[in-house]
Image 1: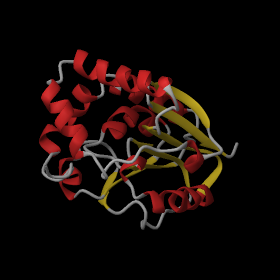
Image 2: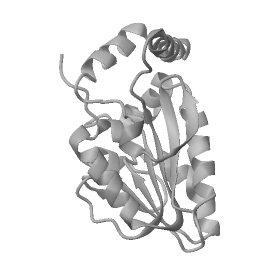
Image 3: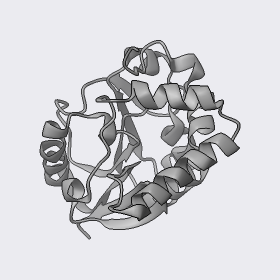
Image 4: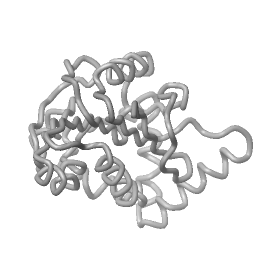
Length: 210
């Protein structure tokens, strides 16, 4: 069975992610509302791992109102070609990109697809470039809780995937194709941070310097 990849998947991505992650819209709304608290007039926002532009589309109003600039990054060229949202979309490796000082960085279901060895260095670089009063917003899959509670949370995630109408065979196949490709995030990798969202084994955090 081949590894999971985003290449060539841009046409199906928006449907697929909402089917596989039934809380996707709720998490999107939460991330956008959090971001609004930290975007100043004339600010700079990075959408790291932008896919087809979900964050940019939902931030459009505040970007216009505050004349803020959005730079969207994704290493998958197919996603950048399919990008339909405000801002400048760039094909780039998030771990090697030369970031400018910024006000908000959003990593929405991104960190878990980056090599573990490179995550803490990336987060350290982002913290260095974060302007006073800004925030780094991370939404991702977490390392499972210990003990029976970990089983409960994992089954809760699967339950809602199946309830959303995702075919069981497709859910299972994707899970197996993610082996070694998707590595859940530990809180140590992003600490110190404030948890702002949770659904089973997915969570969202705010990292601020305000």
